[in-house]
Image (spheres, rainbow, N blue to C red):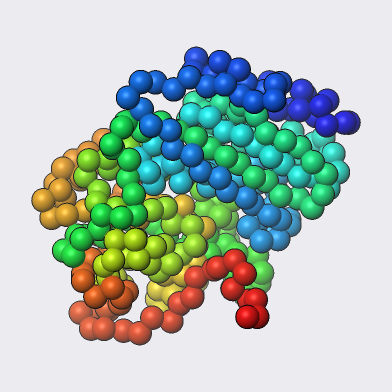
Amino acid sequence: MKEFELIKRFFSEQAIKRKDVVLGIGDDCAIVSPSERQNIAITTDTLVAGVHFPHETSARAIGHKSIAVNLSDLAAMGAEPTWISLAITLPEVDLKWVEEFCRGAFDLCEFYNVQLIGGDTTQGPLSITVTAQGLVPVGKHLMRTGAKAGDWIYVTGEIGDAALALKHIFKEVDVAPEYRESVQRSLDFPTPRILAGQALRGYASSAIDLSDGLIADLGHICTASKVGANIVLDDLPISNALRDTVGLEKAFEMTLAGGDDYELLFTVSEDNKVGMETSLANTTNTITCIGQINRSEKITTTLNNKPVAIHAKSFEHFSNRKD
């Protein structure tokens, strides 16, 4: 099957047809018509086989995750997702694989009313690049800047299970059978916290999604806001699967450095705590306070009210290069 036949068969027949899409797939550019008094949030992420997902990952999971990681970025900005462009590089045309990939991608798009409006297909090593766009009311977007000393640090959901799934895949740990399905789902089918991000508008002083690991992503907020932070290890939302598999000390390390969680990490002032909690109560998201912002411009951790050293290093592209 050639390129344009592939596009017509699999990528042009999405169920979602948004009214704000004037022109979608089929021309040199897409044309969209955003609402008045709305800004457009734009993000791009690339997933490469063997780097962002194991080679044996199912096509459906790859399709889902390629969309989810981009929608998670929009969630961290408080945006409502609207349109995506997809550039996919395939080693060869496997019709069954492409069908399953589209099912994973389009199921998530349909849930959030997101329309595929363009992209590209090429031949080569498997990689997927998605550009996602969303709408956010003027002046209401969330940013990494804005955290201030005294603000409380929160995360949605539980963190660390995606890292546990990877360690199980690479045979570094053995996850008990009763936990394997839920742990693997955390890695393959992350849930972008769209409603939580929108609920945080007007309350959070800063926000980011957890992709590279808690320490690294909190570090981005601290750097952007020129502040420091202390994480209370006792309060980290760790699953029974992670705790039971590796023990508490290793669970702390994996929670701090693991990555691939795609939960939201955000800060809230004391004055905005009640309003934030009330706003989030209308969503299905659980939240946990895990620490507090300070003026130190460093990240520290405490356990049982005592300082402990951090032994966690998050993933970073090109970190193995020699200067």
